[in-house]
Length: 470
Image (cartoon, rainbow, N blue to C red):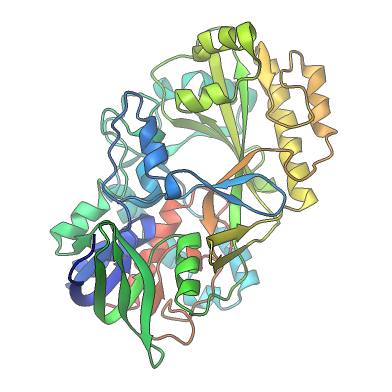
């Protein structure tokens, strides 16, 4: 279906409604500017009995995009009002100053453009607006309690954006109690209340630039109708590190920088000897034991279908494990990689290449070895390491050494990348260099990974970008 072109104009056009885009729209509108907020997806709503459809329907392309380069890395990104915050775990963490210092060494102009104090000063207001609070001990669950004991003194409860959490453990698949506070529930409605106009089901195909000045965006609605949204002052890009980079490329605009950087996520599961306790927060505890190595360990509750997919075996053996699914505890290791990747765009769409270095795989295997040993020390009956070439089921701690001795070949470890950082260059007004009025307002502008959950840093950076325009 197609029809007359949909037109709108405002002071600012914001592309994408995740942590960066929604925050930019909210604060631009608060400053009295007219704002158009453009989102390719729809308002997220879980419809199935376990909410698993939320994590399927609103992930870009209905599933994940796999990064090329020899390793199996599922690149997870949202396509919904609220972006990836709509099906995340709501974990907030402040940017460590040492990470900001690393960024300044990588990009010496960064310290002048975005001072650490400016990013940090925005955190209080963001945390208050999102109802960020520490996970209480009664919501740690079995995986969190075991992690706490395993790394005593080196683990801490997460800080999460929640209101009235009852421990359903379904953060990633739509909280049945509406407790998880995501951009679609908090920031986008506030932006609309302040006057921002939201257009959903609108995919931006091209940024309109004339004589090196940004004029707006053009694209097509889900029903086939074309649209054109014009800006008087600037277009703010908040489509995520991969999405923003791809949009620049398909618009024929520069997307130069340090390269894509990600946190890769590896999961290890264990069958405990007793059922895992409820209620439980989706991500209840994080260990700092490996933080100096660029790794964070989290006790995470997976959707039942995802947890079931981790279980090895066939026939009666698998049937027995599935019958004891409530005994499964999962830990995730989020690793800050040495590798850098690229985003490209061609006839077949967006392509991500992310070849891990041997040192990255070895670090992941080393961490998984220590997690495996820790799980056995805390009474696990079986551990499922999820590493090709290693026994599917480990039954004693001595077997964990096989992980440490694994070759670390490409594709040996199934990985996800949920946090993406574009490393794109920008000027003192957070603009794409050489293009007036084209502003980077999301993780595409962050020089490298945050080393912690990035949602708070992305929102803080978006506010910093807004300040340079109002």
